[in-house]
Length: 331
Ligand code: NAD
Ligand code: UDP
Picture 1 (cartoon, rainbow, N blue to C red):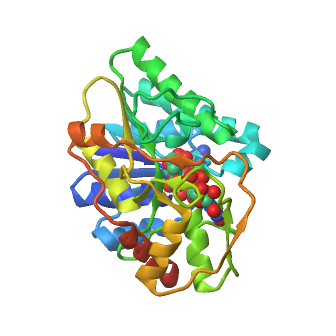
Picture 2: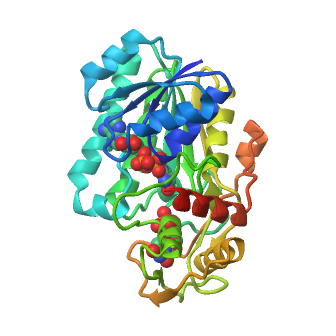
């Protein structure tokens, strides 16, 4: 298949491009490099021996998308492109709604014009808001998002579902990611946020490296086994493999929703201890106030993806920690 990967030089997109190329798909990337670097294209080539076609372009740029679809007969789109910083989205809601929603509307319109009706969308566990219980199944209610970033995911899920209602040629897969961490074993691609990381794992690896003095753990009074927040950390390689399973089994029509998680919840302290065990490096930390908008626990029931796609996450928490650390050291 020839697959257009929007946001393909980003963290999850780059790992997915590698696996697509490895299984023989043709990959066309469109990315505006707002949160990634063009050197990722060469890194993908180094890993796979194949160079994906790359367009530095914005998904808001209809003309650019039109040229891409005109030049390449695209069979399906995996749509990663979007802004993803929760805190920034609170400060810049217009920018987030415009980039993520208008960008996706533009992409969908151009897809329709060119007769491409297959799309896999990067959604997030954030669409479940505060779940009534864990593990979270796909049929749990969505809504109650606490920031504009999460709300863009919620609205886009709705928009993509409405599209199918209007025209049965659409085949839509909504993938709700839990917490991806880790990197490709080559250490050539991985999560390399600019500035001070917002997410836990890149923060931990930078403390381990000595770039940051200590980790702040946001609250130890949650109703969890040790009081710290519990999440479903998933190796980015497993997450990428989930996309491969989806693409290989994609129906000609319909809307499908899958959780991509491990089904196991680990606390922030569990992760810190696993990191220390697997790397031998002590992580100094301090308990601070809860971070506004955080929920106590969030982990998936991934049974549907296993049942329908034959996909299941394989890596252990220790492997994820080692992988994240190896990437940090190498970069
Ligand atoms: P990322 O920032 O590394 O990758 C996103 C890519 O999209 C970047 O390379 C960026 O330059 C590009 N981009 C952004 N806006 C664009 C635009 N208008 N036109 C073209 N390119 C644009 O993020 P990621 O972690 O790889 O996430 C990929 C997707 O998965 C995002 O949609 C994100 O919201 C979603 N997601 C991520 C996580 C996570 O924890 N990383 C969790 C749930 C969902
Ligand atoms: N967290 C933390 N310190 C940090 C970053 C995150 O204690 O510097 C906690 C956060 O409160 C949450 C968990 O780690 O309980 C995962 O947060 P992250 O931002 O990585 O992902 P989220 O689940 O919020 O998408």
